[in-house]
Amino acid sequence: MTRSGAHLGALARLPVLAGLLAGAGCSSTSDLPPDVQTGAELYVSQSCALCHGADGRSAFWRPGPDLVPSLDAWTVDALAEYLADPAAWAARDPRLDDDGMPGFPQLSVDERERLARFVLSLGDAGGDA
Image (cartoon, rainbow, N blue to C red):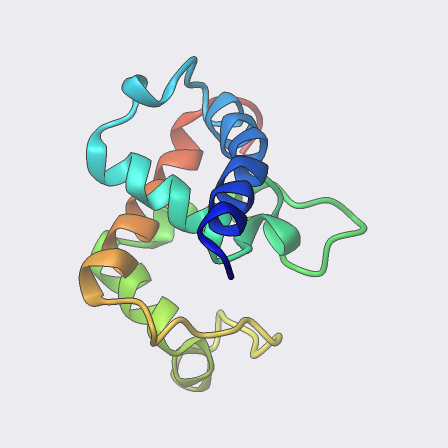
């Protein structure tokens, strides 16, 4: 990708990020702690919203489940570990289905922790959980 193409790709993601932040109850990126903001950016760049929706609440036409009702069952560390290999977690935790959730082993532990912090923050946005 050319340098200008990379900038266009980043610009194309800005409305999605803005929608995520609004869905998380934030009026701007400065409302989020830096690690949660980075997690929001990862949620966009890793295409999580395609399956789970911008606010983690999914919808009937999305293949991924609504994340918000089960957020209180997770810690940052556990969710970050799950994100590395969801199928392995599903094999040992009867509450989880091996439903095709992709793993993110290409992300560093720090990146998975930041993504987990953002996902867990979705439960703080209000609304029916």
